[in-house]
Length: 333
Image (cartoon, rainbow, N blue to C red):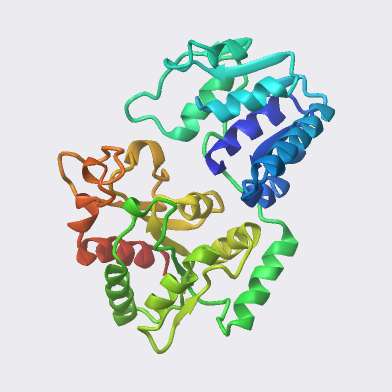
């Protein structure tokens, strides 16, 4: 979703008088509410419900969606959920990307289809933008940017102070976890990485993650007496963005945290395995990428042969990661 921010911005810059509503999962609502180019969010709650409850929820959702009186609906991806949402929006104009497996019904939902596929070396943010540039809706700001409201900046500072973390120091965030485990390093490597960082620098290190990852984050924190703090599950996603903005370096795999950190202007060291580096890694000198140079890199499989275990990450050494981390820190101090 963060990588779609340039699309939202392009729409607002080209059509400043329109109201832009963005459909997102409930957990991402805050990011849209804080986005200066979006006017509103319509959210999908994916909570567990019984069949009857689910039918009632879906009926209510689409009734409320129709009340928005949408004139133009845009689906940035090629899945079925976005197509269904566009169809039931009631919009007269419906723009989507052509899907080769969507000939039976999906492609017919749209009044306008954009055909270009993801090109070799093309970033996902640029890929999303193609849907708009195909209709002469352009922006000079092709990389995601996020604006943190002042009140959230203050809340982030208050939270850091409450945890006893000085806000005038070089703060480092490590998010070891991803929605997809096959993108993650083993916990032991992060412990070794933190020990290496602490041997060279006296900077506070925040371990972050979702509420469900709090125990795993504590496995890392408990290995250290001082200087390492468990922030997993302690913030909403909006406050997490503000925390990342207050930090100087983010370290972690391809994840929401990585893209948010880059969008708020924080330098990153991203750890890549099966994900496409060209498509997903942040761009620019402020960002470093660590990966194992093997022939099958960026295979996009869910682990080697879809086993859930990625050999390219298993073979990546702590020394290779720490070298990039020290380089990024040394550039800023």
